[in-house]
Image (cartoon, rainbow, N blue to C red):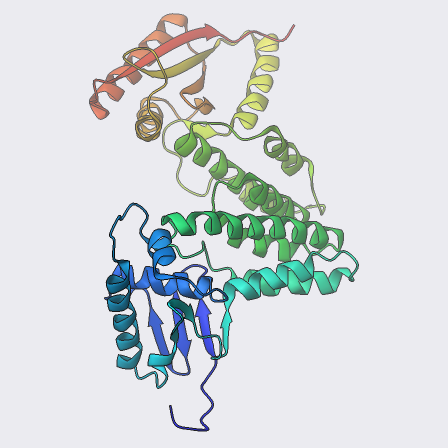
Length: 403
């Protein structure tokens, strides 16, 4: 670097990926270089305010490596890092990493902005409840722009990085929920929708983020969008985790159906909203909350007309009558749903009752016909899913008329 020349400030990203930008030069961890080299470079930047001995560096970066002389390996990696920066045209490449009194450290005399530091500082400022709501909201939104994903996703599995991955993730989601509470108090539901939509992309299993997201949709009058998201969420949790949603999230269904923000008097608009968006094929699949409402309507009708309606339960287990392993369970339940839908009529209704069960409502059938239907489902399922490790159990009972 020429004397008197002011080096450009470095922009360092560690959330959602690792990259260093110096002016027009961008260096990314996806570039074809040794993973050990990236590991060392990332570590020195994260702990840039520390001077670290070669032994401590080796113990932190390569635990379990009992080499008696880590110094030579580190010298080689430091040389390669400096060579990489020089190869990109960075004029102060040799000065970025300091070696002083048998310790290594990142050279803080070169100005840099690191997203993890900016993110943590903005969240800390926003958490100060003594400031006006709008000031806190603005700080939170600036922080969320910096959070592009987990801390060092390509290195987050390393022993020294695991705790930091969890720390920044916790800080992000706790800040999201604090911000959502402020935004709700100020009726900024469109912003909640945007913030939680992004949070859900980072972790689709954060129930609280989904809850704020759905509530924001409802408060904006987007009931159909909210219901669709709720149904997708229910399927996701059953399919990937084998569990149902918490009661607080399930209660949102009742909020969705009872909340109406305007009076619609155009019957054609209402009919269009009620129609299925795609051509109906096979049985009608719905969330269990909807299934319960339909069951109660049918029970009332059966009391008046004497119509015969049966309820069937389909349960999958392994050969030991236990719950199958989750990866297999998801595939099995998806295939069973497809087999059931293609085996039933358009007037039949099916819903997910639990992680391993579907419940069916079959109108205008006798018990004998109901057993024939279940046999047809079993036959199709065995044809479609050929895994011998799965058993399908069926049960059939008549609907109890309302007394």
